[in-house]
Length: 124
Image (tube, rainbow, N blue to C red; front, side, top):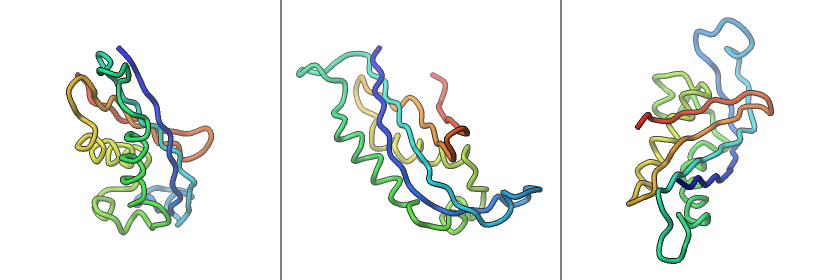
């Protein structure tokens, strides 16, 4: 099994509704996003998937969040824009773009600071 990792980033503001503490107040993060791709085998030119393609797909998704107030973007109008939910939203958005024969989106990790992250993946 092969695993590829691509990083991206975006900046945005949010509030965690119902949180008792500072995170309930409007605040922002410089988010780092790590996308993990797994492949059972390599293709005819001995790569699992082109890093350029993974990066382009990832950037298409995170651009929708960049320099935005996340609470105004669906589904975060209805659920909290927590790191956990952001990781799942990015995963769901990328899964449609990346899934192909022998290549699967394995996980998405979202870092809201240098020391705090959330990862979303689906069990196989």
